[in-house]
Image (cartoon, rainbow, N blue to C red; front, top):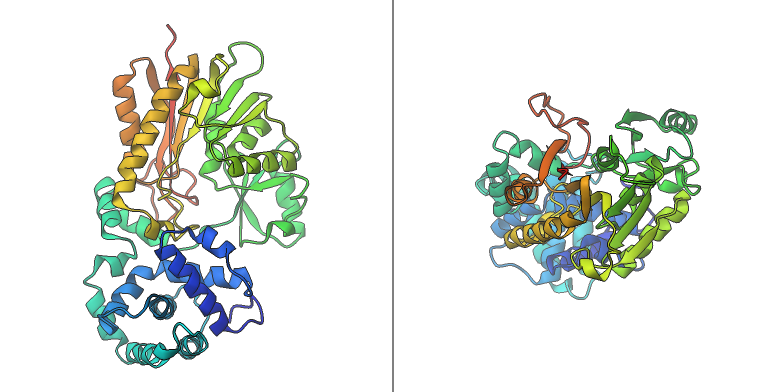
Length: 446
């Protein structure tokens, strides 16, 4: 059994069902978990992650077992139990609870909660029927795309159209756990030296990218050597590519490089730019609370931005000082479809219409910020998305309407690591990373 605490599983399941209900009502998992009281958060988070990774199958199974959905809280408990049983069936690495333990503790959770007490017998009967008819129920639900892929139909269809050779692998990887990857602060130490410090503490790792280390297994950041002193940060390998891409070969017009991180919170890429270059970096963030995280990040790492503005990057006149930038990093708001391994609630929160709305925002940001790049300067556009509408489609449309822009080499669409060889994906350079997109644009000299 997962050793998160001595809190019984039935109590954790009660809390998790409340969290899942909040997600179904449109709140993010991160926000919902913050409201958890009386139960240690790690256990609830682990259960919620397992459930959301198998939520499509769980919903399809519940529809077979109970065509008329029970009341919301009972429905969440039943679907949570079914999802945990699905994780067990497919061999999930975190499916640590025995089958009969799940059934017993789900029934106990229902009995001890006033909102579900009258339906405890019904929930128990559904789960016991599932145990008797597992193979037959899986065969029936295999006819559902939602059950097979644990993603909404619109998501599966869009991904298959965008990446016909790799969509199945991407969906499968979404159901796994992403690695913990560190970015070593090269102003404090080297990747090699920090790897040796990790090894001395019994933490294995492997090198990735410019100054990254992928841990063999995740640990709390408090266990990382000199984390509080700013020797390392947690950042996925694909995101770590952004700062080196923008800076490689970029020459200042005059004085130190003048750079803009246009959508900067929580500050990882701002910090990476400052770690790699003696530059004047301005960071923008529209959300004041998230902007505070930029300050916290820079303070921990011992770095100083020229300015951190709470401002909308689209509203250029409100924050721009009139001086052109040598480089702009635009990590645009997106669907986050590339980071589902770390945020499985994204799959169930997004709607098909969101993609077009986000693409429109991305296009506006490109058009508003491009005039701020000096001739000979660069703009790096990136999103943590695997959808072409938020990647290649946006850049191709931008290039078609901006003759002064030319595209420089960059990875393009990156897909999450697959255990199967992917040598045919030429731009999947790092292999173990989130889904991501990078495009590097240079402004032609007059």
